[in-house]
Length: 258
Ligand code: NDP
Ligand code: 8X3
Image 1 (cartoon, helix red, strand yellow):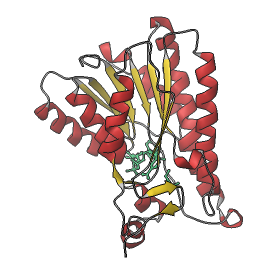
Image 2 (image 1 turned 180 degrees about the vertical axis):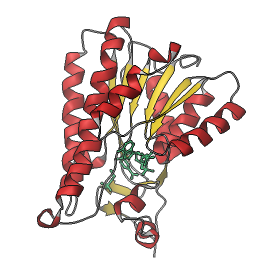
Image 3 (image 1 turned 120 degrees about the horizontal axis):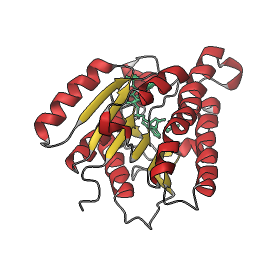
Image 4 (image 1 turned 90 degrees about the vertical axis):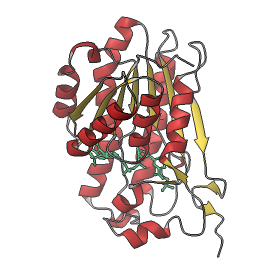
């Protein structure tokens, strides 16, 4: 139960949703946190709250834009003191923009999704993995998605990014097999966070409609699974986990009450 105590956990996208809930769950388990996102003011508020609620943990916040390799390299190279030792990396930052059919997808939407969900995840992993190799320990958790297992109309680019995360994670699994470093992927279905608000450009009504008549997952449901995954004994690696709300059976099959 104490396996996470004193571990340093680096979380991307900690300013909202799954990442924010994950920060709380690791703090509860006694881990120290490196919280990253673009909205640093939210991270600083979160830091205050976590240090008040959970005594004895250290929290470092740093502004980080996943689309920008130099921002990633700077955030990692400027980690202070003991925070340089990243034990667990949670590659969570990510987004979807719109529901357009492929012919209508703008270059900006395409670039933003691939740069954040794929390039950022790869460059951050490249920045952190050498230290894990040197210390011969570590755990990388990727936020995949049901959209990395299936495609759906209007999801081409987002599904493409999450299929890429799945493939990259599988390759890493082979490449790290001869080390104690673990790599895991968690693939949620519908989780009510800011995800749909971002998807629909801030349109709250459209975002709410996504979860109408059903009970979606919440950030904490996924956070608990991330903490469970990273707190298994060293010889156990949960490689892949597909998690739906009970009323969902595939990306687009959802049971709704009238
Ligand atoms: P939220 O929108 O609530 O949170 C997304 C987080 O990603 C925010 O903290 C945001 O921080 C961060 N982020 C976005 N762009 C960037 C960027 N360029 N640089 C740094 N951070 C960035 O969504 P979720 O919590 O739902 O999403 C978390 C992950 O879970 C994503 O990878 C998503 O694809 C995945 N997922 C979500 C599902 C869902 O239904 N919600 C289902 C399956 C997977 P900031 O804006 O402050 O930079
Ligand atoms: C989020 C799930 O179905 O909106 O990754 O693509 S979905």
